[in-house]
Amino acid sequence: MSHDAYDGQVAHSDDHAHDTHHVNYLAIFFVLCACTALSVIFDVVHLSKPITIVLVMSVAITKALCVMMFFMHLKFEGNWKFVLLAPTTILAIGLPLALFPDIGASYYTPTAPQVTSWAEEIRNDKDRHAEHAAATGHFEAGQVE
Image (tube, rainbow, N blue to C red; front, side, top):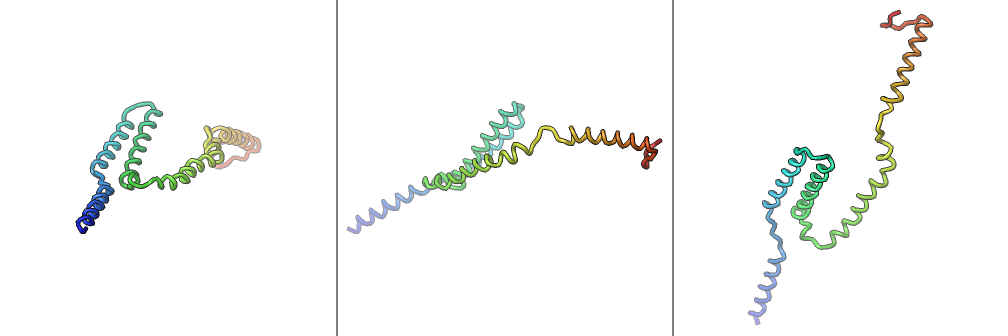
């Protein structure tokens, strides 16, 4: 009887041995180094800008997934992590979409008003000021009659 109880304990401890996860952190380190080298190479090689952006972003996503899966141990967690991730994903997508009309669409203009309309107004104002000074005979310091 005691032999059967001992066998049960050994089998139970063997199950726990299989539950532990051994990660080769050195291999993950080399994968991350290779990804970093790839992103530098993609940036140095003269490809079109959209292709470079897609390649560098895909490498960055790969690196982020490696860090999350192995260093944050999310690979070994249960499916409950998706329950926690759902509200975060909704906020991460919803916040930029909600702020785009106020910030993204109106903040950046293709031409600065200082360069277009304001420069013309300043030029016209200087011309009017010079005409007025010549008509009245009042010159400021530095102006020649």
